[in-house]
Length: 389
Image 1 (spheres, rainbow, N blue to C red):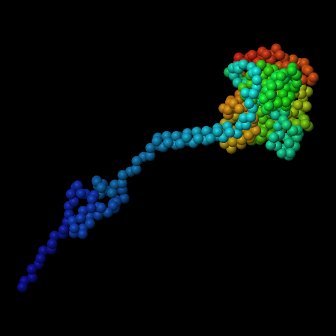
Image 2 (cartoon, rainbow, N blue to C red):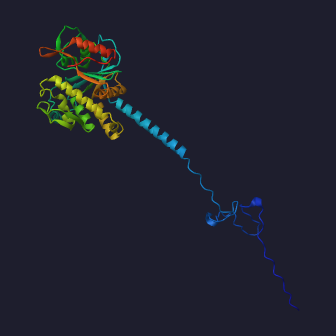
Image 3 (cartoon, rainbow, N blue to C red):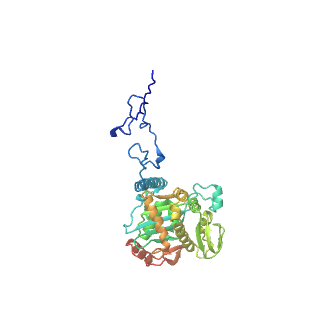
């Protein structure tokens, strides 16, 4: 039989995929896999010019919303700063020793404009070891007495700092005992000003100052020897320009003339020295004013306030040792501190209370006429024109 050649079967084409099914797997049951549903990407994103899901084109990610990110970051920062600030305020406020009750002071003068602080440096040795006492030349006397007293008036015409020499001759008025509540009638008894504190503490001191000046005291602040030295050391010392060299064995002072940075021990010696000066207590009060103004100026700076490594040790050292009145807030204390800073700048004034030049039993007698004029200017929050001693 003749051989018959069969024609080869034409090659089969892959089934045509309708447009609406492109990009989806297609299975006609024959086992043929088109590869459209394998998830493979062809072309590496560089050349395929096709369209649709089978082109291998990768959609770029959206650009970050930097405006929104910045807003969220700023809001987070504000919340953190507020939380830290509030926490710091309550931490510091809780450290204040509100031990002085001015409601026990009787027959008080009328209130005036501005705020008056009675700032007292005591010779309290509370919390000091025998080694501390020796190092700071404080001695070991029992109890405590006032080593310095100042009135700070904070008003619209600038702060005024007035030193009250502890040897001032004053009259002890009638008063109510701070502990017993018993009334003690005034007898016209005249003593040194610091005797009032020794007799019945801060309340009688405030009563005596108010009676002899006619000026109402709004707040009371007291700090002892140890606390004073700790504050100075916490801020790294206080820079002071000492015009003349002097020594004093009793206070431990030994200073050369010129600018220098005093540590806590040296600072305490500087403000306590009295026997090295011919003017005795008057020269000492001027040194105290000068030092406190320098301390406030060098502490109330951004490098201290914004630096937690300096702020917290300073506040911890200072607030732990302050004794204040029951109505004193941390805010009021801050205002006092910044007013103290302003004493040496702008409209600030510092002075000793006016003296008559006379003495009684060795006590310094105030110039009553000038004191009355000074108090009237402070009460009315007027510019102080009275000159101190």
